[in-house]
Length: 219
Image 1: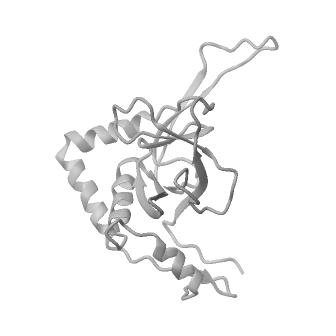
Image 2: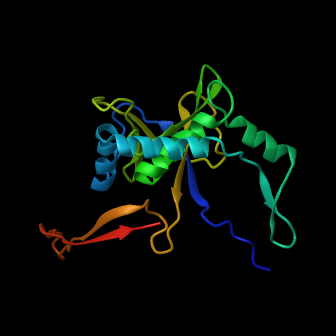
């Protein structure tokens, strides 16, 4: 029997990462889509966008998260399994609860369609944060964290080569990317994108004028 699907479900992917050593190669810088930059600019300059994002944030902040599992009929049901409950309870704001994390994701979901749930260890205590794709960027090889817009040397994280998804020390962290699935391009956040293709000949010469095509992902 096919499993029941929850409409509007959010997709997530996770990676355990470690701080890169000084001078360690971390790949190139990936540019954020222009529409996401524009959205953040509107948040700062237009009161209507600020208010709407706060409304969305407050709505998600009040949601109650519950651990669930599929039963033998393929239907999702709330579970009180100790492991599932304990894993959910670990996810806490600095002052307790999850309103700040959920509200932070709501604001990012409204503005740029995605965000990162970031878990690290500080003085031996787990710290959970909701980060924007501007504060934590993946460039294809490394995660770059920039805590301030004028920070010249971002913190660089590389794949830790583990799948236990536990921050084992203060040099490791776990990042979950959260985004809304789209039926055509499920790996992209909502918005407008430009797809570019460049040709390379047998001698390795790359075409200086790639062909481009813009498209919009709408949820």
